[in-house]
Length: 246
Image (tube, rainbow, N blue to C red; front, side):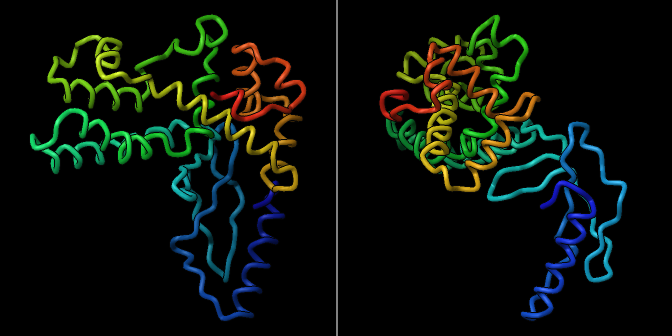
């Protein structure tokens, strides 16, 4: 990883020297170069590794999180939704009519929801980047989120009601809250986790984002805390995790 083309090429040269020394083989066909910028444009420079020109890509999957060259997590959010959708229909296929609603809901909570919320502490910032956020509040885009559609679709199938039935009524009948609430809680918990580990690389990256004049993840956390009346929490950068998220 580097902030310049020359720096990245030096990193590739060091990787080649290291892999040669320890007789390691790098699959250049599966190794991609991603240049992160607001426009998502491809690099103008060719990067060479072992006399091979490295291919550039618009997206890269790292530990299940899809990073896009345009620094946007919309593709990541859609990716986890697609995985969650497959898991939901697989669950319906194997449970059939043998399980009651309570059991099916329990299985959804344990096997499907974790998939569609994977990495939400990061891509959840999309909820707060909307220009209408400060005017309309947190739930302005409720039920337009892919994961919310997944929750309401599953709930309506469990209750056997029409697909156009009221989303709020369906969730209320099952005693469920919108997933958006859990996403925002995950963001705050992750922010607190960063503050608790000041010696980590993530904390150093967090400090760099604080100095970034552009809207980023730290800005979204700040907007969230200010919206909820926790201005002091953000200003002091300290808070007990249990008292903030309970």
